Image (cartoon, rainbow, N blue to C red; front, side, top):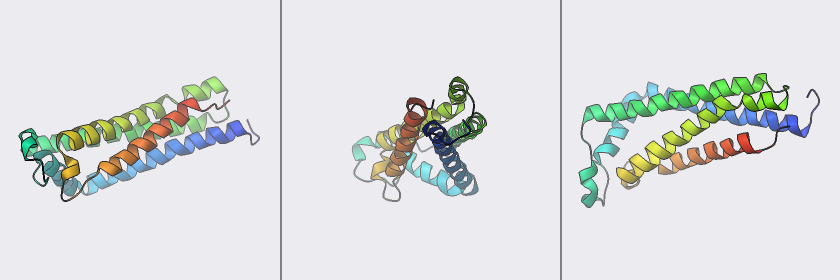
Length: 169
């Protein structure tokens, strides 16, 4: 596949889509680690429901344990590390197999697929379901990351579909 063909452009596009997810993960991790205190405080406010409004009947859900807040935040960071590392390895494997036969290129997708699925779990499972639906993050007066999480889910899901469903002969 040395000449420019539709299949080679599709393969290169897939590498770029996974690389973009990797770069997003690296930037997110850099923010989470370098500004740990601010983000941990934010997660704590959401879980304790201390700055949400209009949800008095649901306040029994709040968890005020500072230790739990930090553990939950570290769970997010740990899963983001897995997502980022999987996408990084996936990018490298796809790049190495750009000119390989179809079945080899297809097999090189496994880490990227795992990365996208982990990313979807982080943003859908932890942010949308737990933080937004259970702890009412969308009622937060300070910051609501629901739209941010939704954008990430959309990118990961579309990237996963493109990676797995579009033919790359």
